[in-house]
Length: 314
Image 1 (cartoon, rainbow, N blue to C red):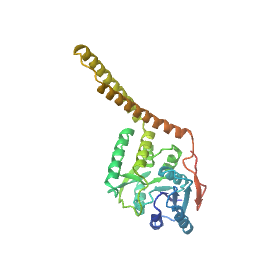
Image 2: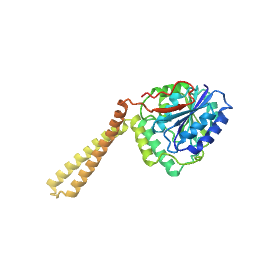
Image 3: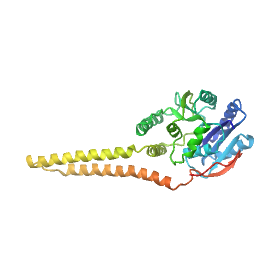
Image 4: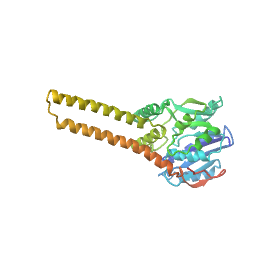
C-alpha cells in the first residue's frame, strides 16, 4: 500500500460523498495502491449509513465504526492503527482540508522530509474561534517549551516510521501534531488553502475546546504544578510580610484591625487553595486514566478489511 488517508468522521454526513469523489479523483492520479479509512466516531447524523454505501461501491475505502464516541484524537488513533500505507495522510471530514493539496504535501515530503504539515494561510473560521485557538497555542508553547504555530492543523502527510513511532505511544491524551513534533523527525510546513465547511457545524463547542485544552496541557507539561507551587510560596511570603507590617503598626500606631481585610484575605487564600487542589486533581485524573490501561477505542464493525483488524490495545 502506497498511501493511506485517515479521516475521523463526526458531524459531516452530507460532505462524505463529495469528500470521497474528490479524494478518489486525486489519489487515482498518484497511485493505484491507496486506501481511504473513514472512522465513524458515533456520529449523531448516522454517517455510518453513508460510509456503508461508499464501501460497497469502492473497495479502496475502509470503514471503521467505533462502539461509541471516543473523541477525535482516539478516532484518529484507530485509523492510524489500521493504516498500512507507506505514507499516511490525516485530514478532517468537513472539506475544510482540500484533498487537492495532498499531491503538494507528498511532493514536499519527497524533498527528504519525514512529515509535512499543512499550514492554513487564511483560516475560514470565526474570529472568536481563531482568537481562542491562538491564545491556547501561545500558552501551550510556553507550558511545553516547544514553539507551536497555531495555523498548523492535523492535515498532514507522514511516512511509515513516523506513524509507527506515534502508534507506540498509547497515552490517553495525545495530540497528533504535538506528539509528532515532540518526536523530532525531520519536518516541513506547507502553506495551503483553507476552505469553508461543506455543510453543518463543528462538533467542538466552547466547553469541549476548554476540556481538550486542559487535557493537552496537563498531559504534556508539569508547568502548571510548578507555577502553582511558586505562586503559593510568593503569596505566603507576601502574607508573612503583611502580617509583620500590621503587627508593627498595631504596637506603634495602635490601629484597629478590621474584619473586612481579614475576610478578604481568607477568601483570597481559600480561592487559591481550591484552585491549586483543582490543578493537582487534573493531573491525578490523568494518572488515573492511564493506569486503568483501557483501550483507546473499541471497533464495533469494520468494512473492506484489507488486512488484520485495527488494534484496540491501550
